[in-house]
Length: 149
Image (tube, rainbow, N blue to C red; front, side, top):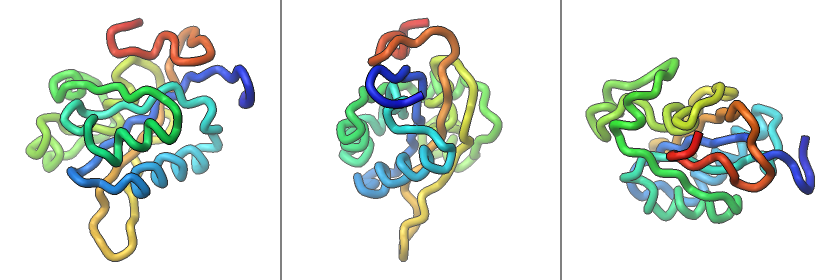
């Protein structure tokens, strides 16, 4: 379902290194949506670690997609059960998962597990995962905030 009035039931979890370029973050999000066969107009929000929410690449991607950016603490993300996780990420930011945990933090099901950006000639600086929120999510952004059911 897409087009005007489409239900916005997707949350895209984004992990990023400090200084991750906007083009890399936004490009990865759009690539992941295409890979999963999901239209961008179903995205209700981007979600990330609170320490990365002010990063221009992450905040800019949410702005370009026209959706809010949800920010979770490392403790909130660490409490989310995810299929994977990384000791290196845990050591760096205090949670073993950012993209998958952020996508799933409000509940739902994981539609696309973590993907890593593949920039030419340098190390990747962004990750992305997509979850669908369960329950009734109204058009727009109702029902997607971290403190809501």
